[in-house]
Image (cartoon, rainbow, N blue to C red; front, side):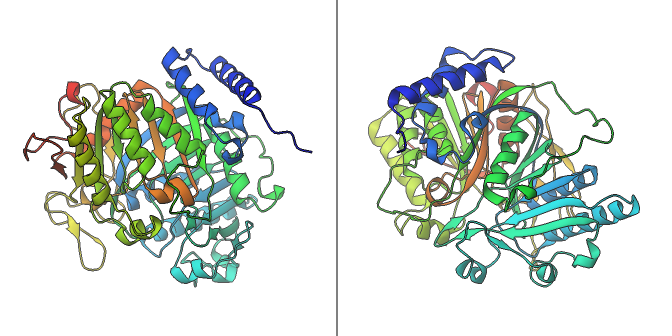
Amino acid sequence: MATVPTSHSYSSLTDTLLTNFSSSLPHPLTPSQHQLLTNYLSNLDHSTTVVPLPSLLTTSHPQSFEISNGLCVTKSITSAFDSAEHEILFVTCFWAKSRSLNLLSSALRQLSQKRLAENKKPIRVRICFSSRSLTQKLFHTASPRGHVCPPSTWASQLGLPPPEDLIGLDLTVKSLFFLPFSILHSKFTIIDRTTLFLPSANISHEIWLEQLSVFTGALVSSFVTFWARIWASSPTDLPPLPPPSQPATPRTQRLLLPTLLLPQPHHRNPRFWFSAPRKTPQNMFLLSLLDNAAESAFILSPNFTCKPVMRAIVRALERGVNVDIVTARRMMLVEQIVTTGGTDWTEFMLWRLRRKVRALRIPGRLRVWYYTGAEEGWGVSGDGDENTEGDNEAADNGHVDTATIENTPEYQWELIGTHRIAVLTHVKAVVVDREWTVLGSANVDRASWWTSQECSVAVLGREWAERVEYGLRGVLKGRVEYVPVGAEGAEEVDVVGRREEV
């Protein structure tokens, strides 16, 4: 007979986990940070962690943070394929024939040719996705083993090169989806189990604002375990890797930061009438983070339909925390309405939030902006390609250009990619107290908090938090519309602002 863990055993386990975690850090946790993690672990349903509990608490070396569009994010990831020696694990959610797919196909073909020219054994490549078309989802197998796409369909159905062009790869393409709404929404790429690419972008044709974060360190091992629990069909899908044939090129190691893996398993029953959050690592940490915020919260999400987060924002405002929200109008509107049972959508939920804040007269400052699209002179032509008429002539064909953030005197971070042509924002980011940063696949919507499978990371470190927040605010400058909350009138409020304001 199974033993049911008691509250005492959970408390003991939490203490042990935090003790071991703290001992692995270069600097001890502050009392407030320790209390946050204690609250998080104490409220966690351990059956929802996907990976072993110790894998949730880890460290990482953040390497880079890029803001661009989906095409440039794909280019940044696939450009790194050439460095792979043994293995590439490529995971995305949506899959569509697009220029991003063309970039991926070209990178795979070149990698195959390289392996053949070097007379090396085929490199193991695993491509994983969830959604390709309505028909694919309606008739998808419900087996957790998923559907392995036959090589004969790679070119005709998926838009990949034919098998004869990929002889230098040990390639498997696999999809997972569970009716009615359980999409596997996470997106990440792991190269040789040493480097993690964590984008917000899919393989698709949308020209949206996206981010790409790159990490090395122990976090990568936690992601490998997550991949194996979700996508591996058998232990042979993840065999031991041989040692590198030559020393790896040194990467930036100046930041060793406490990092949390925040997985979210899918849930097939939407239970529209049930508004309490599932007690998953993703949900419990984000709620604990907002409930422990002391000064500020900056939240960027394409959708806002998650009631538990709305309630947590109100609680933070009541404590005097300043909350800034950036989102989009009418983005995936049908999906929002369907996944909330027909009751909620972003504009309506934020209207209710602003009305409640006005009625309560609480001390915290709530500011809301809607993303308005590409800068003047940038746009989308009728065939779906970027229109580069304007002051920049090199925004097409996956070209990577740079722009410098304004109004960030301490950090003049470069932005990689043509972010100025993005017509909607698809970035998911939360920065609290300019100390904790959460990046990954999860939106602030009911789908990401209930039915979808997700995976995000939380990083503790002021330098990284400022890099992400100032970078995003700089890109958003001049491309968002301020929505008044109270009696301050309709005067525009700069999303960047002075340093003391943000």
